Image (cartoon, rainbow, N blue to C red; front, side, top):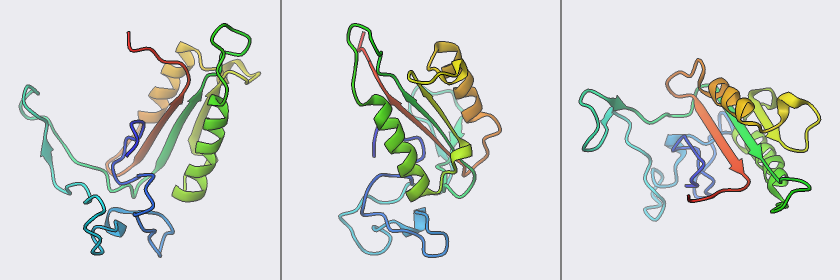
Length: 157
């Protein structure tokens, strides 16, 4: 599973089969469930506790990804600046198409922020990124699929 995925069952892995009824992957369509013991097992289905050091009484449950799908995709190339990157916006376009075609994410349920946009609301500024992150989690319900993708500069400092 990639580091920018939020929902465990939504993996970019060819070993996961597609649900015939919906055309979308699900926990029960996992190749492990169908006898491929080399595939990763599906996530646990019950309530789980956080690890040591977490406050008591905090529990979580993995999503079955059967609810609403929302995606926030950010690409920053830093055009015309020192350290300009290439391909980050292309990554966002490819991810948008991939989510739409393979996992049923509707275009209207995706927010795309890239630094090639003319509309100031579509630029990946701190304010717009925070606003979009709020949109992503707003009204989230159990079994929704919330996907976050970032392609751009980073620092480990």
